[in-house]
Image 1 (cartoon, one colour):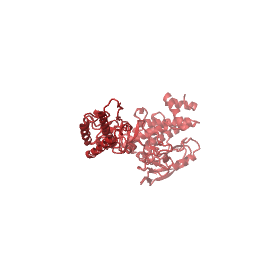
Image 2 (cartoon, one colour; image 1 turned 45 degrees about the vertical axis):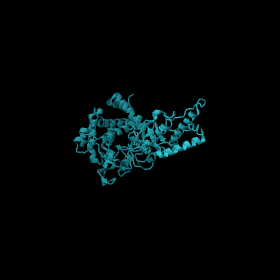
Image 3 (cartoon, one colour; image 1 turned 30 degrees about the horizontal axis):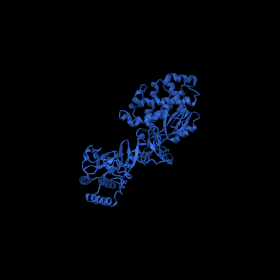
Image 4 (cartoon, rainbow, N blue to C red; image 1 turned 90 degrees about the horizontal axis):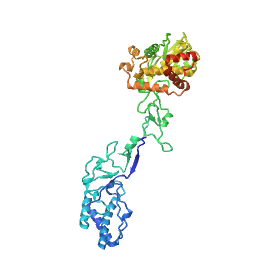
Length: 502
């Protein structure tokens, strides 16, 4: 919430106005009757009231204390008459409601009475208070003129000119909110300033201490009620955003859900992924890291990937969710042969194919979860291909922080080359992917959409801010070494010392 001043005002405005001329005249005659019957009994009453003329809460006129020793009886009676007139005006302004109206009859009555009783305005009501020509509406900057008007916050308005800064409608309620010098309906200000949950679209409730407590995604800035972290609200397996009640996510059938934005560029079967896989191999070759062996690449479901991980004797896996695997053992893996089709909010008609993998070199196959956006799939492929390159080139007995760290650097470098133009000094897969038979949304349009580019930035953010010792701390150490010494010198140092250069 903004740190600007916010006030919720009760009875803030006074509409100046009095009753009809006949009623005012009758009231005034009653005052005269009380005055002549009670003598100076009304003396001192004024000092106990602070009438607010014209609705300005800062304008308070008190009757000055005068000495009676040097006055004649006639002057005393004149003073009593003036006080009676002022008290009559003040009594009408003391209505309990927050809005009072001033009509043209008030000035007529006041001028006629003073014409009969006195040629001067009362000393406790300044002369400049009465003329209408000096009142300028702060809403339209025109003279108030005749008719009703409103005094509020030290200035004046026509009734229709005192409006809510948010919705533009006149404010006629008993209370309003004031923020940054602007007035608002209380309901409009709540809509404007009170955060709403982006999942259930309700106002985020206050906690036991009366404070508004919410969760906020560190990259997407999605605000939501804390309860949605525990009420089984689906979360996108790619971008991590929670499902909004107004936009249903797609169920991938293996416990994962995918938002519609990530679905736009999702790769759904092994055949669709082949052009991207070969493009990333070309990326490695352009960095003088050619992979000569033909390593099978398969897109699989979560269950198949987890089963393959259990059968793998070596390797370090990213928990709690592993999305790719560089396989070294001979196994039979079920891959996605043909992409499923949409069936409501889920995918149906998926064709699976068991495939026996035989070991022909240090690497048996590369497995990647299906249904992920193109850039995330590519980042996983770059990471796993770096594992393959290290094993094929004889990098042995590396600790997890060194091996996973340098693999994350290659993943991050590939994302930079795809998403950020200033990093295109490295070979990119754009040419390879556009010349392939694969149909990416970015290739069709001749460039990446804003949504896909934003997803790429998020995947880079994930790598850079990973909290795990191997993937997070390892990446930051490896990235610092590559920036200082370059990729080739860093790899040479890892081969010789099994550590990063200092």
